[in-house]
Amino acid sequence: MKHNIELITHNNPNLEENPFSIKSNPYVVGLEREKKLLLQYIKNNDICFLTGHLGTGKSSLLLWIKNNLNSHNVFYIDAADVEKNFSIKEFLKNSKKWFDIFRTYPRNIVVLLDESQDCDYNLQKALKLHWDHGHIKSIVITQINQNLGNFSPSFKDRIGKRIIKLDKLNKLDAINLINLRLRNKKLFDEKAIEKIIEIADYIPRKILEFCELVYLKNKDKKKIELVDVKKTLREKNRTKIKKRNQVNEESGEIKKMPRLTLPQKKIIKSLDKGKTIEEISKDLEIPLEKVKEELNNLQDLDIVEFKTK
Image (tube, rainbow, N blue to C red):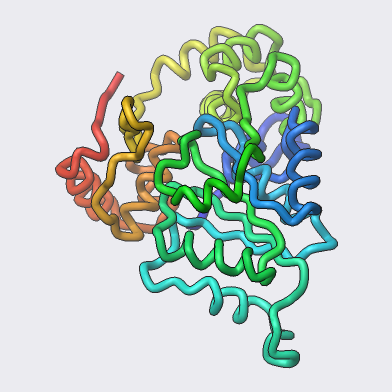
């Protein structure tokens, strides 16, 4: 998926680019304990599970691991983008040139499996077997569903109690997130920041999304105030999406969904991030009419619903 960052000229010459991109970012805030735990599990050659509400920073934390774990060979896999005939063996072989030279797997392989609710049985089985045989030293999987309903009991046994849950930010960390993106430039007044954090319910991705909306709408102002936040967010028409994998309340199992095409998966991920239809068309480089067609197909499958407010 391609993300286009809109170039902006603001009154502040040090902020020419949009600082609030919701694309996964390794500069995470308020997750020091979680970082330490993840590194410990990886160094102990464990399989662990990273969970949390949508937008709490799971993918960003994986990116932080990839950028900072220099002693291991880290491979990132987005299960939502994996094709039906995907082979983890071929993926590992083709990703490192020295396999062709030494005919062996690289050492200290760590697999980061994002969006694992879309992981099928064959990929689960292959990951488990490669870990059992020592080809893969450690696996980190992420998904929203804390019950891991689509994973086999044997895979869950290998995870055990090594579960890390990401929660919402506290007020101080939420403010620090905004200040980090603004490089401590005082573009928003205090009341404006507090209102954005409150509306976003202290969820990192929503905070960034709402900051971006307000920032782009009021880019010519020297200071963005509370009234600007209220007006901008009141004007925003949003497309809402149902949970992609609805959970059975009694069993905790994820209800089986029809197999989706790759464009449909990408559209759903964009909707999860709060994108409008026009933004999806631009970001994914898909014609607007094609996006609408795919959304209608997803609506027929009872996967998405549209609400304007």
